[in-house]
Image 1 (cartoon, rainbow, N blue to C red):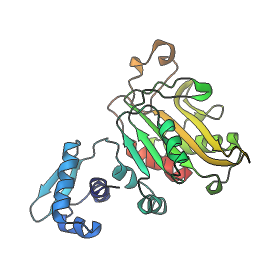
Image 2 (tube, rainbow, N blue to C red; image 1 turned 90 degrees about the horizontal axis):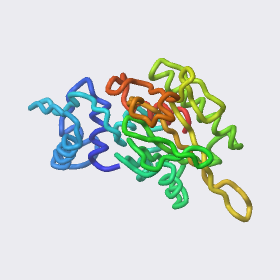
Image 3 (cartoon, one colour; image 1 turned 135 degrees about the horizontal axis):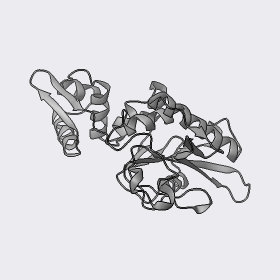
Image 4 (cartoon, rainbow, N blue to C red; image 1 turned 90 degrees about the vertical axis):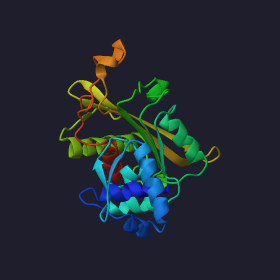
Length: 261
C-alpha cells in the first residue's frame, strides 16, 4: 500500500477528530513532507480534507471513492492485519475489463489468499456460462482470491452458497435489507436481481487438485436502473437510488470481506 492509501486509512480511522501531520508521520514512519504530498494527492483524487493550524488534518466529508485505505479502515482488526502484512493485496480500478480476469491472472502469478481486485465499472463483465454481466458506473464489482486450504468448504456449490450467504449477511448488516439467495449465485430483493456471483478455479493438470479459487461479486449499488438495457432493466434492482446511498462502497466491500476471509 502506498503512502496516499496509508494516510487515507488513518484519516478514515480518525474521522471525528483532527490528527496532526506529525502524528501521522510518526505512525507511518515517513517524513512530514511525504504526508503533505499524500494529502495533496488525496485532494486531487476528490477527497475534501480540512487542514487547521496546530490541529492537523481531518476528512471534511467522506466521498464514495474506492480506495485501499478506505476499505482497510472498515475491516475487522484481525482481517486488516492480513492486508497490512501483505504486499499489493488490494488492487483498485476506476474501470477494468473484468475483475475476475485480473484476479485469475494474479492467482496464476502466485498472489495469496485474500487478494482483492475492485472496480467501479467493468467493460467485459462475465456471469455464469460465459453470459455477459452488465457492469456500469454505480455498481460495485470485485473479486477475491481464495486458497482452498484456508476455507472450510470444498465443492463448488458449497463455496458459492457460502459466498452468497455471506454477501446477504453483509448487506443486511450495512443496509438493513435482507436479499434472497436464488439458487446459489444470484441475490434478489423481491423478484429483482441485485447481485451476481461467479466462482472460478484453477487446477493442477496432473493431479486435478484445486490450486486457487476466484470469486467475483457484482452488486447494483446505487445504479441507475433506468439506464440498463431494455431486456434486463425490468429484472434488476439497486440497493440505493443513484446518489442516495447511506453507506460507501468501501464499507460494503469491507463488510463482505470480513465475512468470507
